[in-house]
Image (cartoon, rainbow, N blue to C red):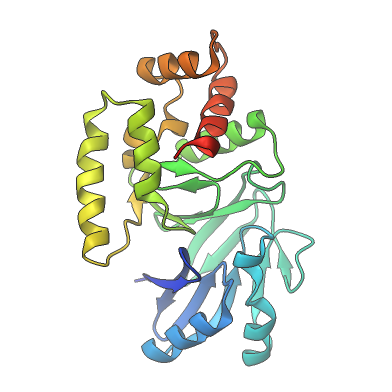
Length: 252
């Protein structure tokens, strides 16, 4: 059985720590100190890292962790310093005896990948709780296609993004789709979690499909909101995604 533990880093990052039988794998270790403290707390030996993309808050701890654990396997996109085993769409890994696949999900960055297996999805900054990442390098059609790829996974998939952005994302989602009762319930539950000091994550893909506006661009109320925001008809789903992403960038 694999346990997933959140390791808090910086202001709002989660470094997800998968562990079983004393062995651990860390996802996007931007802060080596936080990972080393969690390993010591739980009595774990680090055996591998999973990297989703090249941003510093996701890769900053690689070099230090490799110093502490010589021979450490580091999976990630090609071109990232410290990656020992480059992976791409279709690559298959075995982690704690479970098969994991790699999905290329460009949009936030061009090199972004996600890892899916054992009912778990580690999606970095592509998909967030009730939101998605900023579009720094990719295009709207690319990013929309990446989200659609994730939306096609089983509904009970547990979604593990790399940041605690859910409550702010829900405020935006309610502005986009105020008639969606699932948003009110999710906001109630996730606010209670944060008040109690708990993460809002993981969510499930079913929950994201019910509440995440970036996965709901074909819903009538979302379409209408995009039309009002753009000031004209927005006929293509990827165009509605682009309207939402630009709107979210400016939303306060």
